[in-house]
Length: 337
Image (cartoon, rainbow, N blue to C red; front, side):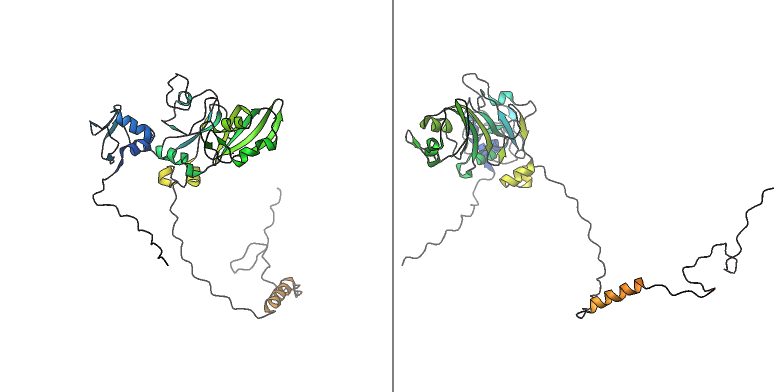
């Protein structure tokens, strides 16, 4: 019987390993560009480290190094931030367009920092687009292994039935490309059109439009309404809303230092020690009820009649007290003269 192979221990970092992080990763964390775009900037000679132009991304840098991109200094990475943006129809999801069309970034508010889009939406598609200032967060959200469900409201031309949509639920192959099963729900018919809710996990190029065409349907409106736990909600076309740092920590597992907005906590005062109360003696069966009954009878017992001239502790003198402590005569009211 063959012996089971023992798992290898993780390799220890070599003492000769270079210090710091790859330059492309640092540029990505600083919100300059994605890793791939940062590598392209480096190859074009637009990045300098300590005053020297670099042409290879195979370089590690530390916080002590001075980095510039196109002459502009690169600061320390800011905490990761994420925005929800309602992309209107007719905008290109790219930093620049070779055809001169308007891009998403041309229409963002002026006070927005430099951001990157998480994934893309087609020119004729609208709805939720995530924006971030952190290249690592962008990469993390785009990884297929994340497996987040992305939901769309889709209007198609025609009057499909559930059997017509069943192939999409099982998965189809289009031009040799296999599509994973989709979540497809027929919501309602509206004249010559029908509204569907579609959920996908891959995000291939024009995936929903191609899949609908495969079953004989034409998409004439497509709105992304959610991306994982993030939802479009009441946003209107062109509006932007930042995700709170607390939500980032909860949904993405980012540490407080990573997501910023670290809450300040007041240091509680040390509790004063109080003397421990003596332990109560255990009562015998029925003894507690007897004590309660005795207390009740004592509290409700009528007072004994007083003898003539007898004073009790509750009697209070009604007049001023004499030096001897006895009550004196009440002062008479002055007579009218």
